[in-house]
Length: 162
Image 1 (spheres, rainbow, N blue to C red):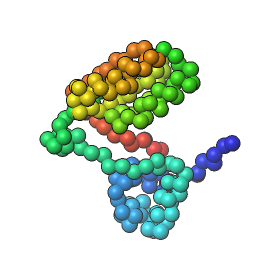
Image 2: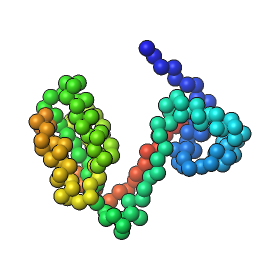
Image 3: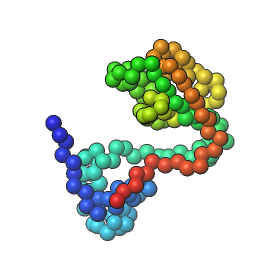
Image 4: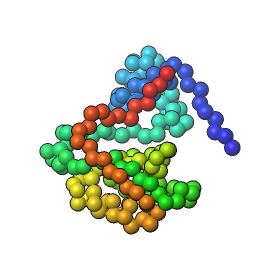
């Protein structure tokens, strides 16, 4: 069973581009930026949501501005290699990390490790507890290699569009 992919025209691509940069724009402001009427803009954005092209809208928090309030915390990129790479083992690991709020991103990768994770923890004891829950007590995890961020140089989720 195949899912029909929506046709995207130049206006749709402009809407997606603008929303990637600032999803808090009002419908009126967005319509003006892409040169369509507000009702047309609203209809198109609803269609893009309905087609699953806009997964969700979130607020990106400033790590630096929050640091004096909640602390800097730790950010780590973690490589994981499993003993077994059958479909069931891979999906079980993905399900386990998806349930952890500290895991912001999880990628199944190749070649090399099986997964790369981006993890945020309050401090080193919090990170240790996380690693024990996710890796140490999982008999299928063969190797864990962590890289700790000392500075965030760039952060974004914007996809380049044609």
